[in-house]
Image (cartoon, rainbow, N blue to C red; front, side, top):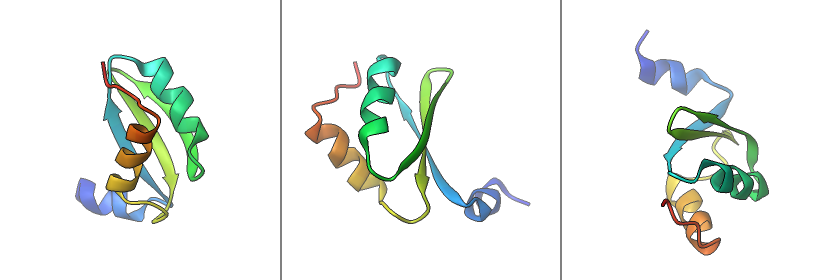
Length: 71
């Protein structure tokens, strides 16, 4: 099974966001209404979103509205 097929079978969508300010990003993502879970993994924050509830662009817009800066 390919990684793409594996991710397609997950009950939620999983995104990773690279940042230098992991604690701030986790705090902001917990405010997002469709976030199910967030956790740090190396230099990334993984965010679990309820399946098909958002697009990547919607999450990016939310972070911009919160004035989250990657650095």
